[in-house]
Length: 216
Image 1 (cartoon, rainbow, N blue to C red):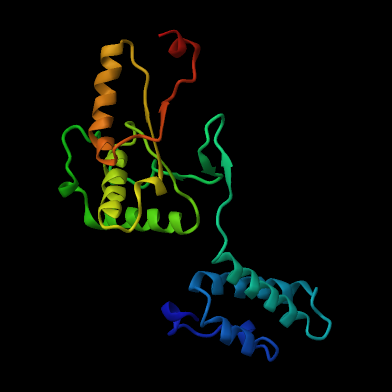
Image 2: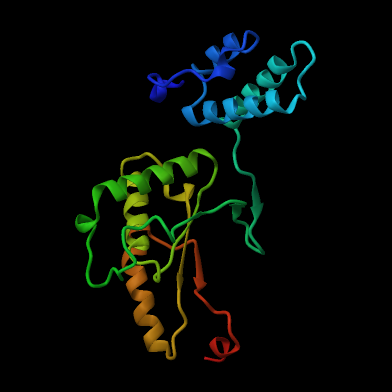
């Protein structure tokens, strides 16, 4: 229906007399994903029998198309984060599943060894997040190459002038250790990557959820 689905057969609901022109115009402004959901919703409304009055289907269809169009300009709202003055989006881009591997990146792994397809996908996720107002990116030492990849993506976007450092809120986490020396060693592995961004916006203890952890 959209540019990526021009060769597919037009859904029957889209050929309904009162919907044909509306859906036709929508293909010019909505994404394939939005069009798919629009057609699915219209099929449901027709089957449900809730739109039996004259112009009922076109009324619903017009409303859904407007809603889809409005989504393009919608930004995720922000709230003050705790006692800080940081305006945090209520939705975060987490880095637990975007990385190439769970293998610790101190084995060592360099950006040159990261698969280009995987890294480009991560960069596009960062871009999409920012376009929606999601500028908080959360990663951790425990997430394999996640730290390395997020820092590489964001620092490259900063270097190219696409974004500024203050446009993003980067957070990482390090697991508590039995000794200060052990913890510092792990933290310095994290800082090896994060230092490319100049500073860490938010730092957390990872997995500090038991009484024994807090007694260390």
